[in-house]
Image 1 (tube, rainbow, N blue to C red):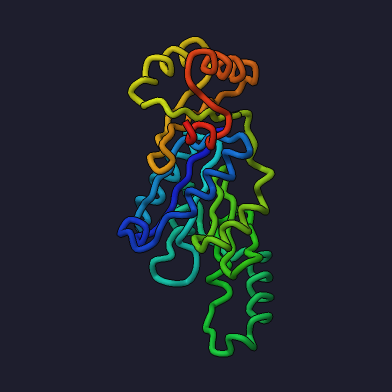
Image 2 (cartoon, one colour):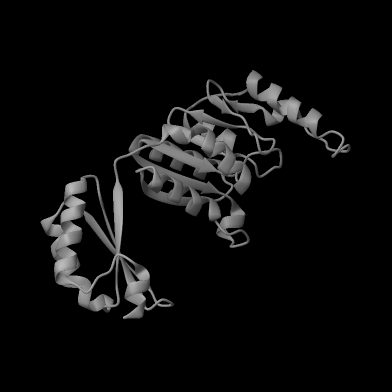
Length: 245
C-alpha cells in the first residue's frame, strides 16, 4: 500500500509550527507495512490543496490530509477536498450530533464559546464522517482521501480510529556500522542489485556510526541481504556495539 501525506498550513511553511504530524503519521504507517511515497506541505490555499489532493488520489492507494479544519477563515481544507472531487459541501447529521454533544459537554468550562455547530459539521457531500473524540471539528473520508485535524492529539486520536484501514507488506531491518559512509557506497550498491531490497544509509554523527536500513516485501530477500552485508562489512545489530568501536 502506497500513501501520500498532505499537511496544510501557512504556519508550517513559515516555520512557525514544527510539522510533527507528518513524522508521526509516517512512523505509524511504516510500522503497519505501508510505504509513504510522498510528504507534501501546502499553504492555506484552496486551489493548491484541491489540485494536489486530486493528483495524489489518482496516483496512490490513499491520501492523508491534516490541518485546516474548524471555523477560522484559514480553515478551508474541507472546501478544497470537496472541490477536488467536484462535490458540494453539506451538513452531515452524524457529525452535527457529535459536535452538539461535545459543545454541551464543555458548556460549563467554556460558557462564552461561540461556535456554529452546522458550520463545524459541514463536510464534502457523501463523505464518511470521522468523529473527533479528542476535540471538536470532525474529519472525513472522501473516496481514498482521509481528512484529519491539524492539532496533533486530535489528529492522532482520529487516525487511530481508522488505522486498521492502512496495511502493507513492507518490512525493514537495521544494521549499524562505524565504517565511514564513503566506504559503504560500493557494497550498498551491490547488495541492492543482488537482492530485491532497498538500502538506505543514515549517518548519526552524535553516536559516531551509520545506520543501514534494509527494506522490502520479501522476508527471504531481506534476510539474504542482511547476511550478505554481515559477511562483507563491519556491521552490528545493536547500535551500541557500533558506537563502542
